[in-house]
Every structure is written in C-alpha cells, then in structure tokens.
Length: 107
Image (cartoon, rainbow, N blue to C red; front, side):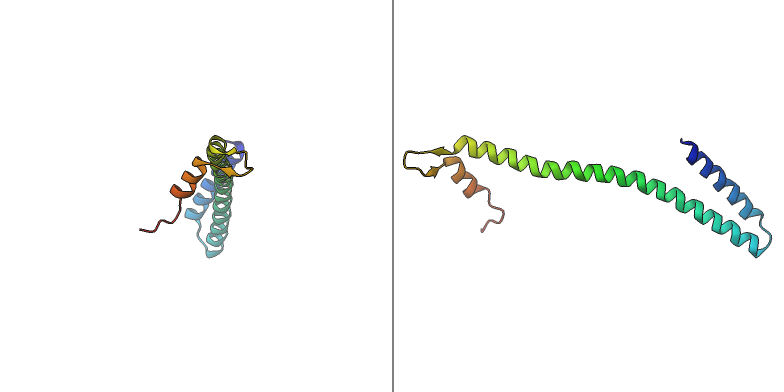
C-alpha cells in the first residue's frame, strides 16, 4: 500500500468518526463533504489504475486484430500465388479463400 493511499484511508476513517460524533448540522455537512471528497479521490485512483490496464489490453487486442489476419492471408497467398508465363496471377489457394471464407453465406 502506498503512503498516499495510507494517508487517504486514515483521513477517511477520521472523517467517518467525525461524522458519527457530529452534533450540529454544520458539523455534519462539513464531515459529509470531507467524506465525499475523500471517496472521490479513492475512486479516481482506482479508475486511473483500471484505465491504464484497459488501454494496454485494447492496444494489444488492436495489434493482434491487425497482425493475425495479415499473417494468415500472407501465408495463404504466398503459398498459392504464382506468376505464370502468361503474366496472370492464378491460385488454387486464392480461389479456396474466395469461395470458402465468405462472411455472409446464402443457404
């Protein structure tokens, strides 16, 4: 636990004790505002930590979404494409990909 977190927790406990011991509305309001502020600080620290993890995961996922299809397609195209004497590209692998890898099949 970091020093800042320990200080916030100690201050939070102190504020909760003040709230329970408050006699007047003014003391209660002041203690509630202090508890609310400390709670917001605790939540923002938690959100910042989770946000960093989510950003890292999203970046890795985005790169994988780019590189995996690129690697698979380059393997299939590289394995099946050949340049014939006529100057045209023909490929059995390419025709298999075109026929079998449809996103929307009919029937």
